[in-house]
Every structure is written in structure tokens, then in C-alpha cells.
Length: 109
Image (tube, helix red, strand yellow):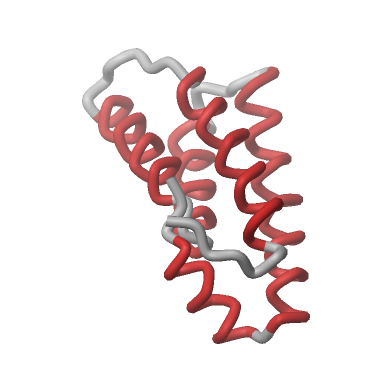
């Protein structure tokens, strides 16, 4: 679900104190978009919203979430209808793990 190697790389790159700030900023920005996708998704903004959250999540190692985003982006590009439930669920689970173990500096396989 989470690439903990990437999390540790980022922590090493920015330092322990800055990592918590990066994580907080990520959660704030991505939560805003995910809440919008949950409550009032705008079909016009959906491709850009998905691209934004995927890029942000990739930097923090949320590999399963990124894969789901990419799949939805590809379906949208082909003009297919999409369901966001799996994406929303995966984000909630990834966020929970990241907050619990990412802040503590714990590596989980």
C-alpha cells in the first residue's frame, strides 16, 4: 500500500522536523481535493484533481493510491465512466497508515 522506502528517502532528504511539515501540508492539500471528490465531484475538474492528488501521493510513497488514480485517469481519457469509491477508500486507509507509522518513522513492509 505504501512504499516505506520512499517515505524514508523523503524523510532523509528534508529532515525529521521538515518531514512532519511536508506531511501536514500534503494532508491538508490532498484532503481538500479528496473531500471535494467525495462530496461534489466536478466532471470538468476531475482529470486535474486526479493528476494533482496522484502526483502529491507519489512523492509520499502512496503506491496503491497512485495506481488507482492512474487507472481512473486512463478511463476518463478513453471517455469511460468512473467510480471513485475505491479511490476514496484507499486514500483513507493510506492516510491512516501514513499518519500512524510515517510520523513515528516506522518502516512497515
